[in-house]
Length: 373
Image (tube, rainbow, N blue to C red; front, top):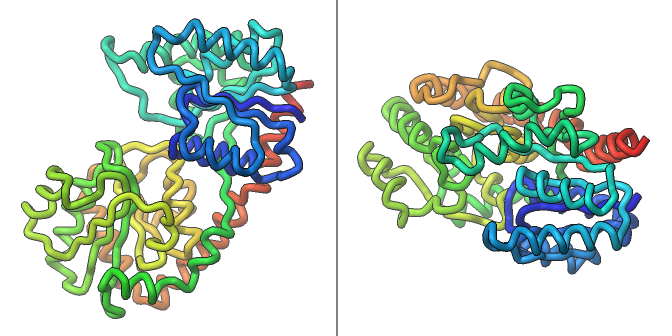
């Protein structure tokens, strides 16, 4: 099946990584797959090219470049004549969908990836989403939502429920398998002792991740547990970040390690005993699946699909409730190492059965076939 994927950017991000895993999951399909970035080639684009995928970067940097980018998109789609045009996120949904129609291709599948939609009359994204809601009745045959929460949120915004399908993200778990025995090496490198309980979190520094909630919960827990350390991984999660550093220092905490953005996240997950998601808003939180795949027991806020991914409510707490988050983390600490190990093994079995890339790819292919027919 010839597929053209259109996405806003190919820098590292959740949608970009999912696109990469989907395209590379069947090597024999690579010659018939084209990936188009509206902006830059990025690290994901370079990696796809090395693996034989045809990647185009159109270099759009502002709205002034929109007409030229649209014209180039139309020519690309007309030249390759794909059976499916799959777009990823709002800008690509609108521009790629219009280009496909102008090129004579009517089998368009949109991709919805978020629930965090900026509000208010001065938000360009808000009006883009509103306009996409109108166009969603005309342009796409189907709309793939990566989270149940994203599907519900967009139906409320006016998207057609009958076109929307939930397909979660898929993962190649082989990258996690190679770090299953890295715990001792990672903890030695980070100076963590065997008897210390390490609670970790992963994510870029962003208000939606609510790391202030995580720090406050850690402060409350530290008053009750002295053998707990905290490991934070992600973009701008560094001591040079004055806001984050200020939160930690204002609580008088000296048991935090901030290691910044890391290419090999599973390596750092291997050092943790408990994973914590403190977010106020998510769609489909990849980090929860990744932590569970590594056999980590998790405590999460009720943000997006986090509770569905976890599968049990015992360790799910309300958003922006640091006391409940602290209590749940304490309960997890009190379970003991063996009970946490069993819980982690159960979590790993669940996500590996449900979110393997082969299983998810088949869902995409079934939807494509349905859209064509």
